[in-house]
Structures are given as C-alpha cells and as structure tokens.
Image 1 (tube, rainbow, N blue to C red):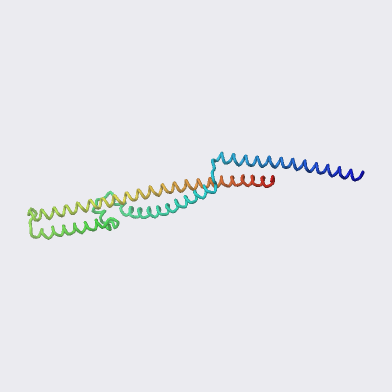
Image 2 (image 1 turned 90 degrees about the vertical axis):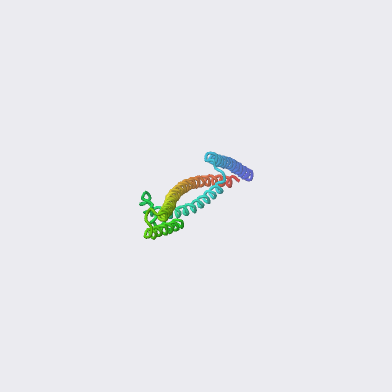
Length: 212
C-alpha cells in the first residue's frame, strides 16, 4: 500500500545517497592521494628539507654578510683615501713621498724626519769649522747618510703597506659582494620553492579535511 511505497522510496533515496557519498569519498581519497604524491614528488625533485628552518638560516646568514659588507665598504673607503694620496707619487722618489700627509703622519717616519734634520743641521754647523776631509766632517756626513737611508727605507715601507692594504681591502670587498649576491639569489630561489611547497601543502590539507 501507500506506506510500503513510501518506505521503498525512502530506501531507494538512502541507497542512492549512500552510493553518491561512497563515490564522493572515493574521489576525495583519490584527490588526497594525488595531492600527497605531488607534494612528495616536489620535495624529492627540489631536494628540500625543513623549508622554514632553511629560509630562516639563509636570511640570518645574509644579514651577517650584509653587516660584514658594510664594514668592508668602510674599510675600503679608508684604504682608498690613503691610497689616493700616494697614487700620483707612488713611483716617484721617496723625497716626494715623505711630503704626503698619510706618509708623514706615520710615527716612525716623523721620528726619522727629525733625526735626519738634526744630522743635516750638525753637518751644516761643523762645515763652518772643518774642511770636507776632516774626520769630524766625514763622520757627520756618514751620520747624515745613515739617517737619510733609514728615513728612505721607512717611507718605502709605509707606501708599500698603504698599497697592500688598498689591494686587500678591494679584494675583500669584491669577495663579500660576490658572496652577498650569490646568497641573495639563493634565498630568492628558496622563497620561490617555499611558496610552491606551501601551495602543495595547503592542497594536501584541504583534501585531507574534505576527506575526513
């Protein structure tokens, strides 16, 4: 009768709904498996580990490199300033080099300039009393020659040191700039990979939520 037909109709609808849900769950399970497969394949292809830890470490390393780069630029600017003072006279005679402020400010150069000046004053003073072949004059001129030689040697050492400091500062700056750029590019690449990884990860979570 009427009641039997109603029961049969409801039973058919229930079976139909159950079948649809079973098929839907099967589809969701398939989508979840596919999403997990794509995520795992991406991790293997890109050789990824903990994305958050890697990017944090790389960013920290880049920040440290940047600090060292700032210091290197300051050191190079100082070395370049000193080098520019001697650049025009680097191949000139040491008498010209000793007049350059950055050379003259060296404590030993200043000391030896004073010693040479005293030796020359002594020669001038004695020359008014003795002839050029007098032993006292010969000794005084030897002292002046020794003072001049000591001064020359120190001036050349200071100039060579300034040139070396400049070359080292420039090489260090270039090396840090290269490292900084390489690390920056690596971080950008990691950020791109992390973005793609998070997208795949969200897809897995979405499908897992729907399936559960």
